Image (cartoon, rainbow, N blue to C red; front, side):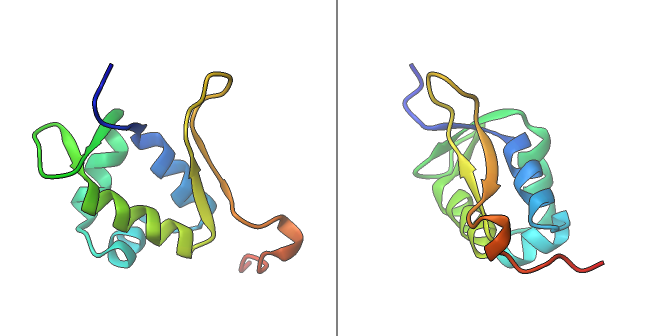
Length: 101
């Protein structure tokens, strides 16, 4: 068993799409480079590590990306025994601001 939590870059892509953010938008809001967001999105499954570690995403970077998505109204869902991981809106449709045309 892996000692670090495992996520999939496609979750970030899905969450970013729900929030109507580009890679550059998410990177700016999270205080990371667009290359970092892109690297995470295309990297497939990855683990979050408390510190910098080859092949992992640092917890600091991950926390900033997750916080930026939360601020945009989207949360990540972890995988459990019955369902895979994903992304979803925090509030129901009736409570969200309408998307611009």
